[in-house]
Amino acid sequence: MRPRFRRISWERFRRLSTQRRQIFQEYRRRSYDAVVQYEFLLPLTREDQLRESLDSLFFVDAIRQRLDEIDIDELTSWVGQKPEESVRDYLQRLTDLVGRTFGGYSVSHVDGRFRDGDLLTREDAARLVAARDAYIVDETTASVRFIVPIASTEQQHEGTFADSGVDVPHVEMVGGAAEEVRLTRQLFFGLFVEAIVSSIQGEAEIWLIERGPHGERLFVWERLTP
Image 1 (cartoon, rainbow, N blue to C red):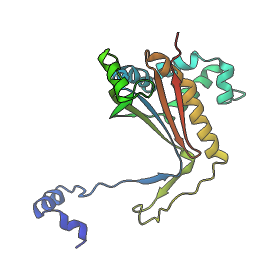
Image 2 (spheres, rainbow, N blue to C red):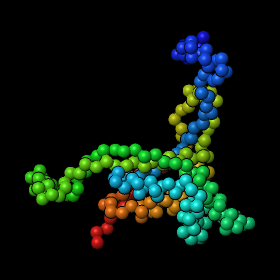
Image 3 (cartoon, rainbow, N blue to C red):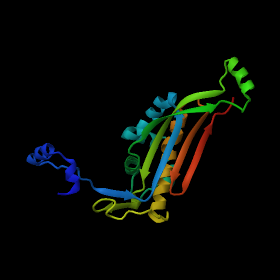
Image 4 (spheres, rainbow, N blue to C red):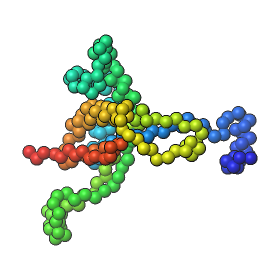
């Protein structure tokens, strides 16, 4: 008897075998040697605004609206237009590309404490609080994350990942993979980032973390004082 079958009771085995069902779920296994991640960090009070903006990823008409807002010359600098391709077909190809690249996002909540202002002594901070101003702020942050696998680095695996001898990848970002990373970045920033930021009002700072084959980078939008 195979060891993994010992984890199944006789009753369960009999019930499944008589109905001719699979006892264990089967999966097709694949891995990606390169991914790009984007993570927005915002106060939880702005999560609804952020979700509303990000949900445009799921609708063809919303994506087309964003494409229509951008000059065609700028779009073609991102993705070239084929000589025989009409503008309509070109925009449809871009829409399909965006749909394949960004399939969804995840949201998690993180509790934190932040200093609201310059560094003070305890005495000065107490005076500030007594005057009904905040010094240390408790805040729940919404972390909104996109994970985009780079399709050109995909590998198919027979058997389990352990059986196929998966090791630490060493990927040189050249050719198709490098171009795909560039295009993913261009589409994300060009179509969604500024549209998302402009829809969120009143925040002192907005942070966006980018992680990819080239390392990590932090982008910060700091509110201008009138």
